[in-house]
Every structure is written in structure tokens, then in C-alpha cells.
Image (cartoon, rainbow, N blue to C red):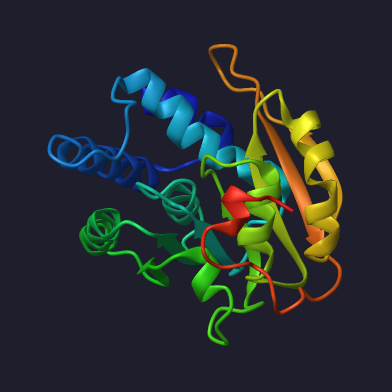
Length: 230
């Protein structure tokens, strides 16, 4: 049961109820619009909810931190973080309109405040004054290499803030390959936190601190961060 998995996060019945309603909405919407391939209950709880909440182990998601979730998909990890700490200010970003429509419905149905879903491409809005270096934290579970994600994310982050990425056991190779991108985008690796999950899932959280402003020519447009990583 979900509540068994959530014991370490000290959630009350209100939180658990909203997690369950959120899951039901995903699975219902998933019948006609693909949001996730994970539909079995136990796997869903671990790979979506517990994986998202593992970010709390960084100690960075306290108070009313301003967060952007890049390539959020069905809302992970942004919505679970909001359900855990309602004071967080969260922007959910995705390039697919159907996902944003779904998230708008979730936000309304669960009566969530200080959270919004934005339909846009990261490399485009990260260059606008409204979003440039406006966030304490950028997070992403999007499927891309760390070099690409760093270029997408760091333009959103304030100096002194963090880009936090979740990776599997291959993280060391990704970190090595992303060294140049992290430096160019104004970051330094502050920590790597091992966050093993049930069912022998081996995950790691990479904390990249932004120590200087990102050059305004980044992120590059036209899909270059993915096609030709820094």
C-alpha cells in the first residue's frame, strides 16, 4: 500500500489522499493519452512517488523555495514535491500540450496553490526575462544525458541556486562527460547522494550549484543541446 512506502516521509492522511487521487487521475487519463508506461500499483508507487520524494534527502526543498520542473511529463517530480510541502512555489514545464492540459486539471481538482503548468520549450523560455535566473532550484527527470539537461536547466537557476538531477548507476560516466557543460553553464558539482529505492533500484541525486551567471547565448536553440551536447 502507498502509506507503507511513505512512512519515512511522515505524511498525514490528507497528503496520502491527494497522492492517491493524483495517481487515479494519471491512470484514467493514461487510457487515452500516454502519460506513463508504469501502471502497476507497486511499481507506480516506487518509480514515480518514492523516486520523486527522494529529492527531499537533499535538504533543499524546504520553505517556499521557487522550483521549475523541466520536462515534467505527468508531473514528476514537481507534483509529489508540492503534495508533500504545499509551501513550495512550483512551475511545471513541458513541450507537449496534452500533458499541460492534464496538469491543469490536476492542479484544479486537487485545489493546489502556487503551482502552474507551462507549455513551452526549455531552450526558448530560459532566454526570456520572465524565467531567466528566476528559480532557486531546477529539477528534471527527463530522459536526456546530463550535458544536455545541464544546458536546458542552468539558465533558469539563480546564482547560488541548484540544478538537481536524478540518475541511475551510470551517473559517474555522465558526470565525466558533462564536466565541460557544467563549467560553461556556471555550475560546480556540490554533492552526489545515493538514494536506493525498493526492489533493488539504484538511484543517485546530483547537486550542481550555480556559482556564476550563465552566458546569455545559452541554452542554444534549435535542439542543439540534445543534438550536440557541450
